[in-house]
Length: 244
Image 1 (cartoon, rainbow, N blue to C red):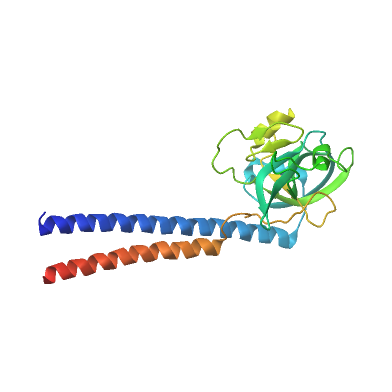
Image 2 (image 1 turned 90 degrees about the horizontal axis):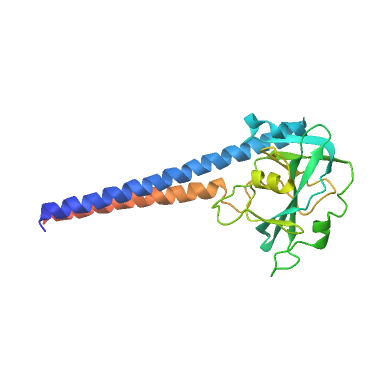
């Protein structure tokens, strides 16, 4: 292979590597900006806590937005929907959802918080969650953060596994509505105010089990650093070859 061919091959590989590393860095910056925008939107909403009616959960124009909301109603007499593989303080557990019917709006999905597994082998929640102890037939005033449901990630296998409580591998609102015999569900979920005496361990963290914005920035810097390192190495090797 001639020297000229070697240089062309080397620079082609270097340019491809640089483009790949820069693209990965830009993707990390994009994720950082998206997540920071989400945190800023939630912070503004929680700062004012101006309560909108629960009916706004069904507004398709605000499907990706965050609103503080409150309203009266009662939980629908349907099984609990429990999201599997939820880690809280290093402990495996389930996130519990139930359907709530406001007095002036269609039913919506309510996030009642996290609970540890009752049986790790069968992935079952506690019997009280299945029965809906303390929730059935009661008129309640709920308030909390209306938010998009958690990201489904890779959709592998069925979303729902029916049973006394419906086990979910991901939150798919259309599948939940079908399982509950409803025509549909609002595109947002009510995350109940942790100050209310209902449900399980709760917070209003909208980025659980995921990287915060500063981590994405750190990874972006690493990818850009690798791109720069490849460029420097390519220049040094070219310079040395020419000197020889």
